[in-house]
Image (tube, rainbow, N blue to C red; front, side, top):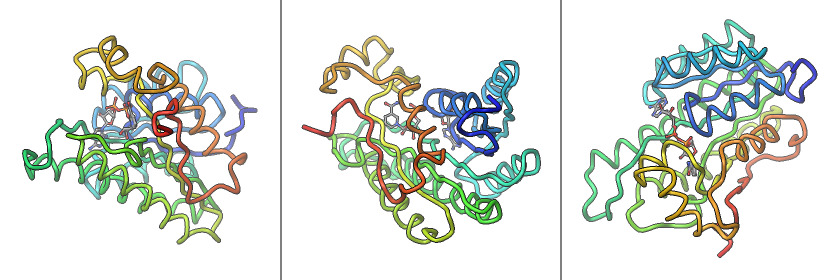
Length: 254
Ligand SMILES: NC(=O)c1ccc[n+]([C@@H]2O[C@H](COP(=O)([O-])OP(=O)(O)OC[C@H]3O[C@@H](n4cnc5c(N)ncnc54)[C@H](O)[C@@H]3O)[C@@H](O)[C@H]2O)c1
């Protein structure tokens, strides 16, 4: 771990209690980063941080609601107080959105998606950037989706917020191109996580119903996305900014 490709980095991952965020926090720690796991579910994030620490990594958990500016600011400050200025940030938390056509969608569901998926990433980035300026640089990784490019009926809030994230990353990339701060989106296709289990009833059904929509013929695994996050977090991606890294089993190629 001490000689991993992220040795010396200080990372924050939002939505780190499970799924892609958890796999990424684990991969960052395995590669030598000190990691702050931020999540609404404090108990689950704490258990994950303890498991990383028990395996020889450096990790801490902070309760965080990415919709709440004070909560985001305090959680990022707590990680910096423990490990030093944060220079890797994965803005990954997203809410579950019900499937409704636009004409049937409530304003409440629309606003909930915007507040977590989009405003949450804005707030996390807002408080990561000063950290990275004081660290002398950094990498912001925003988890978008193949749904940022490909629309699906009934998924209006999700597709809209994920599409907006591609633009948000590009703006951050341009604003900080000469500050040694990179900002990119990472866009998974369908990945076997609790999110899909909830959406489809269980993961077997998700695999059966949605796996074949991916030309590779299956859903992705969280670890397959986490490896891409490691690439974006590390120095191997130093010439990459304002880009979208699509890891979707060919979903958006059709
Ligand atoms: N799983 C997929 O098929 C898939 C596909 C494309 C993109 N993504 C994106 O990847 C990311 C992670 O997806 P996942 O499947 O691991 O999700 P998940 O639903 O399994 O986990 C999301 C995590 O975010 C946390 N969270 C929710 N609201 C929060 C808030 N307000 N503040 C802080 N934390 C909050 C949850 O507690 C949970 O731990 C999301 O941005 C999602 O949109 C997922």
